[in-house]
Image (cartoon, one colour):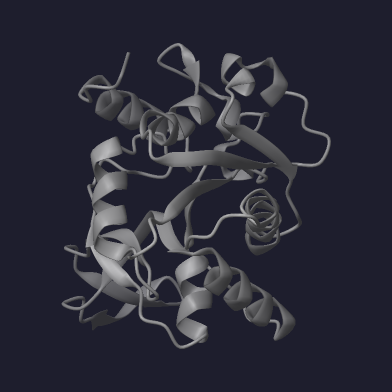
Length: 237
């Protein structure tokens, strides 16, 4: 009889958000009467099949403990590292410790703290379509015409027919992702996301169609757009 998989979320929140230029980490900026980070965490708590959420915080962070969500029984905090990969590995270690006695496959959904508009429906679609050895990630096809720049000029047009924009969450089996990240870091490979580590290890993660609304808040002008999308979601309460 097949063993029922277990799921954890790991949320990377150790970055400083310098490009926002607002003098504080972007994950704590106000968004519809909550901190942006609270929106990013909410879908994982609303999905009752997720055992817990590990949040990787910057060293010395004192802001998270002030949020009401910090007292949620499913939250676990760890100190992140100098890079995203280091922070995610710290989260994976916490999941490993808490699931060591489980006689079942364990999967992790790695999410950006700066993506507050994720929906529970998309989390469940990712789970249903990507729970195997290859794993998968939410993504959307590129529709814009792409230009390759040389000295601030358009040098050539890039064929975008087979290109997708990667989002999060990205879902992988715990042991496989941890091994892939450790190998990539040991080799000094630059990693944009977890899927890159899995690709380097020989896997081909599934591209699961996401939504344009699942934006990553990077610049100040992204905040009103995130507020708009949240206002249109049923869980925005």
